[in-house]
Length: 531
Image (cartoon, rainbow, N blue to C red; front, side, top):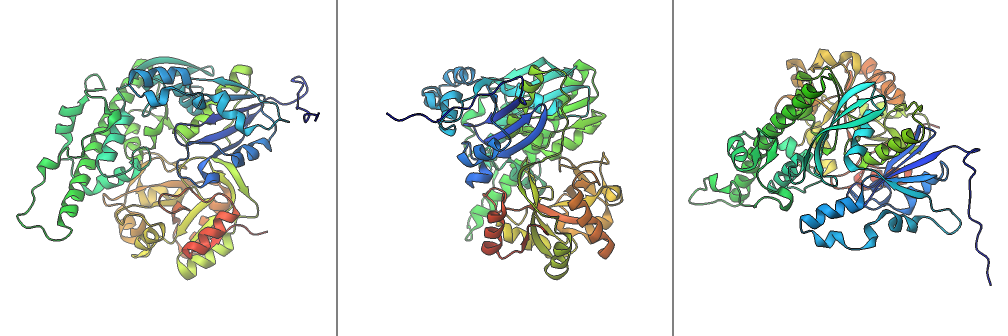
């Protein structure tokens, strides 16, 4: 008879409290590790599996999380049985049955016989969002707004944050979801819902909001900030096609072009509704709480066009750079950590929390490549936790060339209309852009480009004359900051085009092997570090 491998046990009085937050089985799986209140690690499952928006965890992300120590508790980002009650109410019976969607049964596969299976707790989906924002924010008090597709039942919530506690003030429950509304129209525009909303946001600049009033009449109860239909099932693919005037004789490709132009008008109309709806919801939240510090979370908070208008309502805005469901692993872990020890001081260390590629930031190598070929990649330091590359997993380019935008879009296999973001030395931002804030380190707001910016840097200007600006200070990312400083010294240009180091439909590069594969496949030099 064989003997079992010894199981690990820990004396709580002699070891550090380690709590994991987990997001899985919905979309955008992730894991966060917090040790005595310090955020040690946070990463996306997709970066390991190489499956875009992967809902499942994998052994690779679990093994990396375990390098920070065995967890005392795992905190699941939502309440699965409450979620099942909503799915049953909605008639989604295929999602209701089966234990494979329950946290304990799901997590067992990742813990071997010689490792203790931690206790698993659950927290509310929207409370995870709210905690991820509030407890990483620089504020002691704030109004917290969460807008997403759906949690268990909640779709829009308002919270009062004070003394490290969250009090629910207001809510809109399923099916009254702005996130579902925006995703339904994303699908109507021929894009992938829950993934390509940002593309529809970009399309909006090319269209005219001619359908705004009709869409409101058909779908939106603006007075109550609710919706007239359940949009979980999407929108008819022929909705608003009746307005397209087709010539008697169609040339090859003419039908597709007319439908595409119509989709741009739909996108423009929906984006204007988004601007108005979000601003009105947050205006009411600010009014009922009398708070001028705003913490804004949920997947809808990734809509940087709408975000910019919020400075009309609030003095200060904090959006944690991973406000969607992947960020809920952080929120769940922080929430539970503070419940264990209310005296903990949670410090936001910045978004660089994932896999580390060691070595000094390769400033000199990048500069030489930009001087020669204008475009290169960088994969150095810890990976960003969030959907946007901020200098550690970036594809970079000199923004001054008239052909650079098309070249980068070709490399990334994106539509030609797609815009790119500038990363700019923080102290120069107001010279080139009209932006309501001096700091935008996470690409969360758009800014109107000044005339000379449009003329000199066409690669980072969108069709409406705006840019999604990333400001870089000496504290944000020292290596990336040094690169921008050096480029400025050599060229007089204080910015670079910065986009994510990936191809459309693929996750960001995570490790050195990914970086090498990207370089070989797409013939773009990728620098990983100077040792």
